[in-house]
Image 1: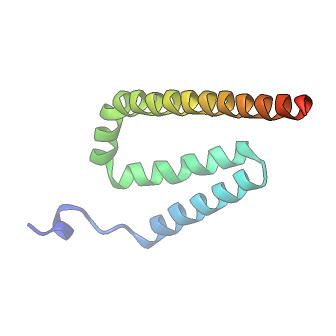
Image 2: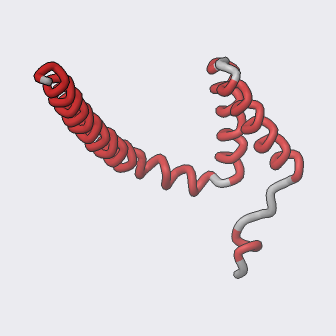
Image 3: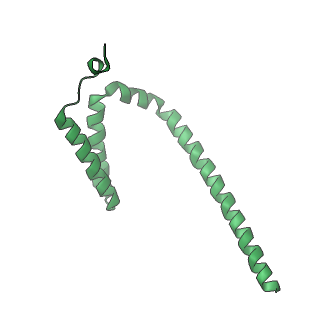
Length: 102
């Protein structure tokens, strides 16, 4: 069985729906309209899920793992940001103190 036989070709109207709703969703988010952006994002994801249901099932099963990894990344980024802020504050304070002493 070739790859094309395993997965049916996506119909043109579905491709247009996915591309159009994803593009309009992006435009809505850029313009600061999150409501319509989320709605259009949902339309494109629903169309994709109808074409590839098995892939979406596997993603859904792995979602807790993805969330844990994302939270870990955010925690590390937060620690790095705090450290950089402390270093910057120390440098600024030392420079200011040196300026006052002269």
